Image (cartoon, rainbow, N blue to C red; front, side, top):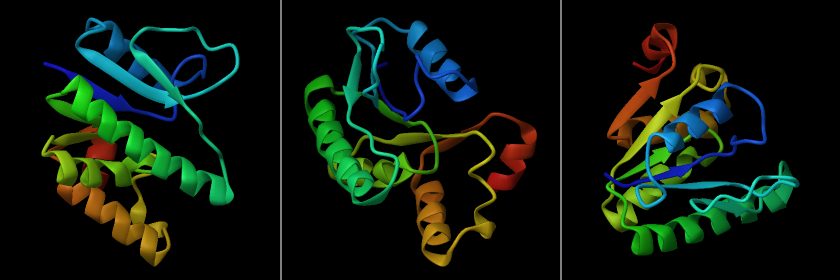
Length: 151
């Protein structure tokens, strides 16, 4: 099993999402799991973690998502994962259906809770969120509450 994981939360960030991705990576060898995570100062250099630019707002964020898509396509071609793990519905969730469409590799979405009440989002964000959820091979929820919100 080879996993390509995309996340905007990975150590040295502190929190449940970053910890979850770190623990997933620990369960695999460097040859089995490749993580794409934001470039941050003082981040430990790890063989199987590729750090990419990540802008929080504005046009830079859109350009970063395009960059992440291109880098992810390259990683799928070279790394040849069996599955792509998308770290959250927003902002990287949109990459799941695109990567799956262009490469044929299925993706699994991690649902943490705060991003799931999509009915409170704008029309375009609800539409994208539903599309990402519908196209995923599976959705892994952090709690039964979150799982009930997904379906």
